[in-house]
Amino acid sequence: MSQIPSIVMFSPAEGGSSPLDHEKRVAELRAFGLDVLECESAPALYAEVQQKLQQNAPVVVVLGGGHTENCAVATYLHAMHPSVGIAAMIDGLDDAPAIQLLQSGVDNMCLRSASTALMVAILCRLLGRVSRHEVGQILARAPSKGWSLQDQGWVLVSPDGIRIPLTTGERAFLAMLIGAPDMCATHEQLLEAVNSSYAHAEPAARPGRLGVLVSRLRRKFTQHDIEMPLKSVHNWGYMFTGQVLRTGPPDSYK
Image 1 (cartoon, helix red, strand yellow):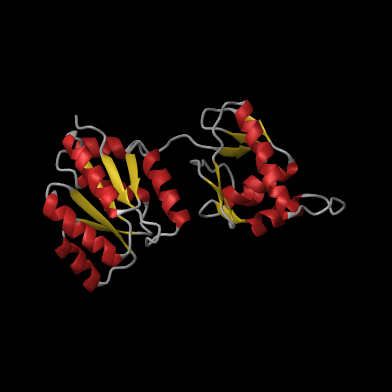
Image 2: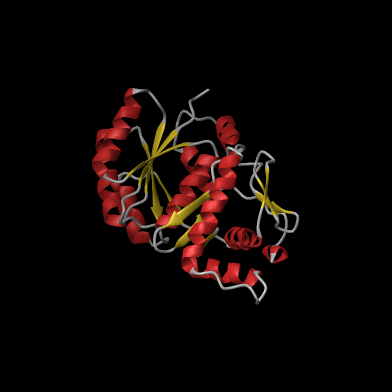
């Protein structure tokens, strides 16, 4: 059987996807069991691909930069390593940029808004050494376990069944994140959710209180020897990075 493929992603800081969307995509690809490596510059990407090829490891490159940069990188890779599969993330289905990408050496394209399952299928098909059976095995790695809010949202349950009791503020904070379509929310949205969860007699939480709340959550996770599935987005808000199993509508936690 072929090795699990390495997905080398070209993800420059000024790429086409927002940092939140990119981080979410990488986390989902890894949840499928894929080895995802990120390179922020073209030279770093070329070096990583060269190293993988020297190790005889199957590799596919995903171009997540801007259109012009993607074309330039694809041209180089196609000339230097014609056996490497190349996929490009695109914003739309316009003919002109798609043709230019194909002429540059891109093998396949995937809309940035496409599902991760579709993206995994495309990447697997780019690996000539991966059979249909192996593609099915990789797709079957879609997580069957995940985080969930239970007992009307008062308990956060880990993928391994560890139960973490929540305070009123923690419950509102996590319900807002998990209930969001992209599982991320701004500081203002989270503060509003936390404040709304308390009785009117309670003093309103201030922005700095979110940091205190997250620190307390982190201590709870540490006590259970679990990595906290939360990420702070600088000067913006927070995102929930774990795979979630929906056990009820978000409103049921409020």
